[in-house]
Length: 233
Image (tube, rainbow, N blue to C red; front, side):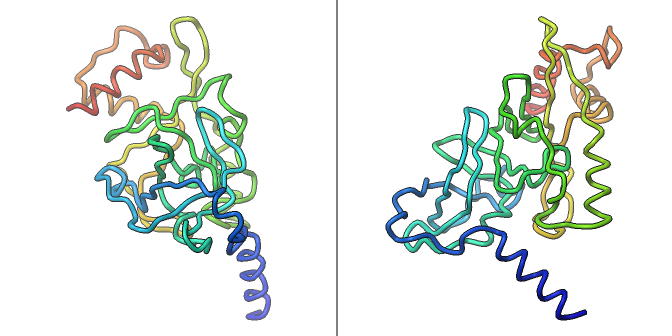
């Protein structure tokens, strides 16, 4: 049994990507800042080491990486993969490993709103990775029953919110006041999933807003406005 567990651990380690890049490839690394937890992110406490990422795909809303490495030596930084957020070219990105609805370790989504309540807006023009779910890799390597449970949870795709033109939007919503304990590869941090009715009701309560329409009919633009107001209170 112990041999089987050791073998599985070796497979997982080997599948995590390169442990070091060639010195000749150091110039391909893109410098980043890493924020280990959601609290560190809000307080702008970046990890002190000089790190970079190998980018395999990017759009104006996301980046996907092959690993986090030391800019000088090319050595892999194992803590980097589990960082809650990164800053790349003066833009800040959320680690999608901290989402059950869109769970992609190594991929990061650009924040549209940053504050106590953070938001990432997803629509038909968003890259595929922001509209898809990983089917077997949760929490940095979860397998079996727990992974199945998370797949079942994430299959409840969040509500589409319509804008004034009738276009459908989804909101990846992060309440940074709700910090979850460390688990597997996730540090003690807030998680980001599709905005729920309960979370929207909390925003309405904070902003002391009374709706004239049913909560399910509230326009996307109004939700964004209310979240921004809530961040200022």
